[in-house]
Length: 392
Ligand SMILES: Cc1cc2nc3c(=O)[nH]c(=O)nc-3n(C[C@H](O)[C@H](O)[C@H](O)COP(=O)(O)OP(=O)(O)OC[C@H]3O[C@@H](n4cnc5c(N)ncnc54)[C@H](O)[C@@H]3O)c2cc1C
Image (cartoon, rainbow, N blue to C red; front, top):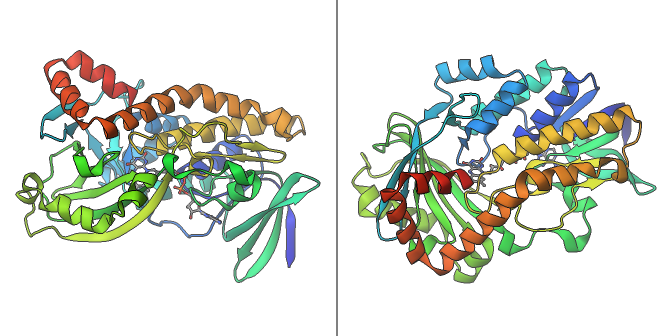
């Protein structure tokens, strides 16, 4: 086993959260190694919906021009609104607000979106390395690096600080969190995503379908261009296991619904069908800070339990983590005690929304009729719709 020289920071995982943390820390002048098991561009199973708040966070990181160019190339598809369909077929169309600084929301296939941020991290000064982290190196109770498989051999990579951004299956989180602190099925979901090439899309609108067999969860159609959309469905894992559902069959059934079937131009041509898991931020009291390490994004488990959205929270957590890491590195103190403020800040930024969303998710599951009632009322009252939608 070979050892490589010590870095200031190793970020494990170059998805949106890891690449954002790496870019922010490199811009602050730290020596950052960004490690990912894949070369970029690479796909990530996702609905690809990126809200305006996430775009504005990337603007702050210096990515405005890159994003505008990607929009011009047609890689990011701008959105104007959404359609919500209730179990009894009531429809609510609502327009999206722009972000506080005027940004649009997008459907941004992750093959493009993630590569854009990863490239920006490298342009900001981070060094990218393709390699699979096997485990954190822990000495005297402190994380001092990662052991990783690089070019067929295992390397010890040392750093003052490790940021675990390796997604929902994070080896960093799994090794550092106590065994009784892993996500439980009631705060997890499983989802299937595909791209469809022959659908009459609703231009510039993302569509959400809530119906009896899918609650607590939903099916979606998110447009990415003419007749093309990201399509999928997901539901809470405990419920999914109990009912012994099959996601591929559920997607077929969804495509057979008359309201969808009539929009399929050649019967529903799917590509890149894939399933993946989601860890919700509604599970309480999980540790995100360790001596020498921080967790961000899906590795920490910051997905909204109602919408399934995790990109914005991932970026928020990365921005917070980079600031806390910068302070800790400057003070030459990367202890849990010094960096614990990161957990408090994540709580402050995300907890109210996680708690409310989880409550709504459970209520909708037990009382689908409430979804019908709400959608009907919101249709009649745009102020109520706005209040509700801004909570999501
Ligand atoms: C089906 C589905 C639909 C979704 N739809 C949406 C949506 O529309 N909008 C939204 O906001 N969110 C959505 N989400 C959630 C969203 O995908 C995640 O919240 C988001 O990807 C989190 O980003 P991340 O950078 O934290 O993790 P990831 O994007 O998972 O990135 C983790 C990175 O770590 C790397 N990695 C993993 N293990 C290792 C290892 N051992 N060593 C080195 N590298 C490693 C991976 O290759 C990957 O590049 C969806 C999730 C699913 C499953």
